[in-house]
Amino acid sequence: MKIVLKDCVVTVQGIDFSDHVSSVEVSLSKDAVETTNFSGGGREQIAGLKSDEFSVTFQQDFAAGEVDAILYPLYNAETEFVVTVKPTVGAVSEGNPLYTGTCILLEYQPLAGSVGELSETEVTFPTQRQGITRSTV
Amino acid sequence: MRNNRQAPPVSGERLEARELNRLGTDRVRTYRNVSRHDVYGHATGEVMELTLTEGQHNALVEGGALVEITEEELPADAEAALAESVTTGEEATVVKQEAAEEISADESHEGEQA
Image (tube, rainbow over all chains, first blue to last red; front, side, top):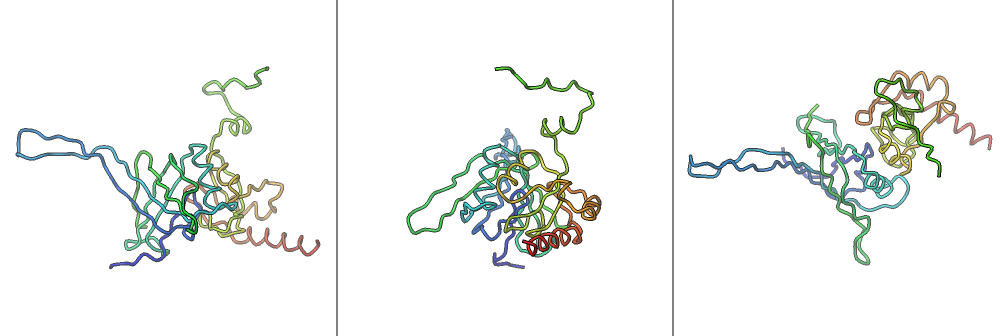
């Protein structure tokens, strides 16, 4: 069933930041390892290492317990943490899968924008090791 | 300046809890959610037990999302309820409502006295 994104749930280190997120992208990617050979006449590839990541656009908030207060220590301490995303606020199910990844924050722009604009920051969370997992239960 | 750092433990050496904390090993601690957001499925004001790395603990406590509760601050019956639910930093189970209500009731009583 087609859906319109209205109530995605995004958690970072267990904190539900959904009310401070305006866009989210779950990106699943594997390296393309070339194995092209003289048979077949065309290129051949196999899957290499994963490089899954979450991209989240946060509406910036510098208050205690909010976006910057949580993201900056995670960036500064180089701590691994879990990010989860699901399409709707409902229970996890076949129609509402949960995407989970252990991430590390390597880049963070706390402040960027022009006068009169809402302060937003797009943060990319690259995943570690097994990448993003998908669950339906 | 004198170097007061202790030598690292020898492999197989039994470690005291304090030594484990110094080394940053994950351990179960009790927290209260003081942020406006749900944390590991717990609403504002609820108490939970989490197993976090030192970096995760620091981020959440210094960031102002959680407050660590010591054993002295935890009511006796709430402590028993929490003992039945051990969680990890990635899968937090819901703490028994009695524990959260006990703490909320204590706070309300203290507020009235003030």
